[in-house]
Image (cartoon, rainbow, N blue to C red):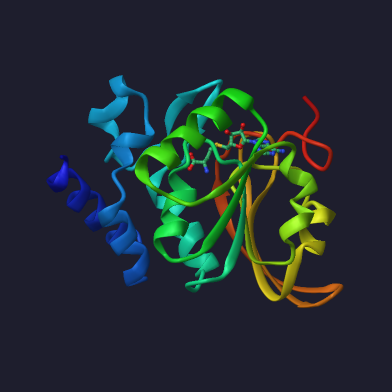
Length: 211
Ligand code: SAH
């Protein structure tokens, strides 16, 4: 279903600058319409964010592609995602061969998405809690991707990143943020790249916005 629409979306992503063939292949394979509410299916291949309930959204495809390309996970690497939401980003990472750990703070979304992972046959470790604290049991991670916007970069997440690991995280105000791409050089040294103008729902938690 929606093969043509999906191919058109790939062309849009290419036009917008996404070059990584593995990322484009994952977008070709993963059916985004399965991650949005039924009534939204016909809009699933437009390059826009869509509501998924509980006041949350599935990120715009370009944003997911951009963050995935920036993270550039290699097969077998451990990746921690904060903000499971619809599960779309987690599944894209899984298709790239990453071992994905994902955290969602809203129980209904967590529960619904866990069932979807199961139904689609993805082995993704999911947990319902405050992701700004991270997930210490499986740390350190080769990559950390945060799909909600916070005021600062949580210290816990910096600690749980392996040396040489990368973190992609939007940081800024409640409505617009700058994407920060960090590489951990040593225990307390990070190299940072930035890209402006992204818009995420708020990261709420101990090291995020207060409710
Ligand atoms: N990656 C998701 C994007 C969902 S929107 C996707 O592909 O659909 C961001 C999600 O982050 C929301 O579901 C929101 O509930 C969740 N969130 C916000 N703050 C969080 C926190 N501190 N820990 C875990 N999840 C959080």
